[in-house]
Image (cartoon, rainbow, N blue to C red):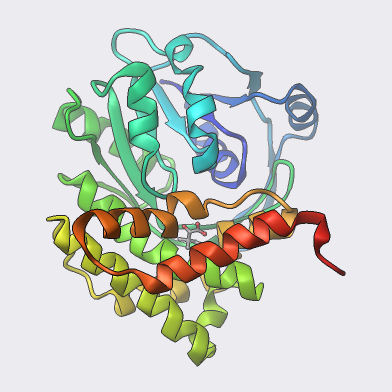
Length: 310
Ligand code: KPL
């Protein structure tokens, strides 16, 4: 099966490597010619969960890319989705399916604006993956990938299962879920708790469990998100604190994606995460002071730029 992975970041490289090893025909789509050339030369340098080092060829193609594929997997940062979606039509033919495995809310909507809802799926990846450098990724935490058809899409349960099988053959604990909205909010709960606090404190995920003040804020942010989801009619069954604990334990050594962004001086995904809880909260009449506070801190961090000392 011909699979395009759009976005050669940490998750994109890790997934591309695993799918390549499973014998799929993979193209990694990049929009930066300089990085694409370096990646092609260096390959994907992967440290596996059990610490083994491997180098795999990086089949990088410059956007708009390789022409129609059977499956397109979006792994760019949430703030790049609008721009990256513009290349989707060139990657699609009649039977192409497009799966977002990105953090946060709003990605499906951005993609649908360009290609319509018919072929769209979304999923969540609970795994920990740290990017050490271009094409250098450490698989630092085990976790499941759960996927489902987007509301309003024409993707059939059989097609979802076919993608589940592809991920399973590539070694992932992958399953289908009938309600993608619930799934995206369950993951949002995790990200609004872990990501901003690990980024601000510069600690790996597991350390949050050892910092009572930070833990209190992480749990409060996740509980607010749960209250907003309930008010919006999205039934979340899990207990936010327990879910956060499980993910912090499973990805303890991992640097959250927002911590990696902050350390690299990149924009963060705060607008797709805590800021969305605030937006939805305002719409359904639920107060979200902790998410507001964390959003404003991360926005200020982004604005501070080179006014920072040290
Ligand atoms: O999704 C993640 C992220 O870092 O963005 C978790 C699951 C929290 C892993 O670090």
